[in-house]
Image 1: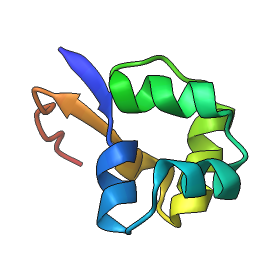
Image 2: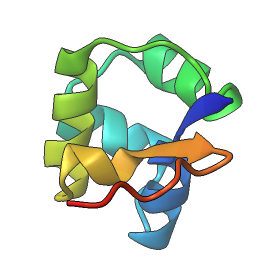
Image 3: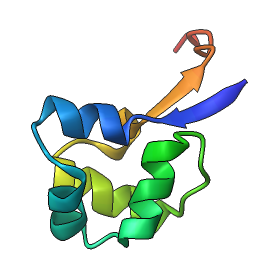
Image 4: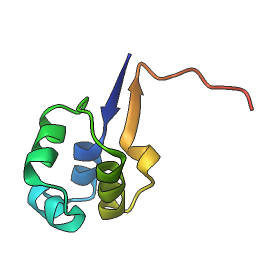
Length: 74
């Protein structure tokens, strides 16, 4: 099982280049390049938060489990 970051996919869907996302999020270009090249990269919650704000999405939407976790009954 792996956790994958969907930052690149969401940025592309919103028409944001990597350079523009770096500017908007204030995340270092090397960090963002690492995330783009390896979506299973480990990132801090601060970086995840900055990217979520820059992309205008909830941080939970940036994370995907592969394979998906089973639904839990509430």
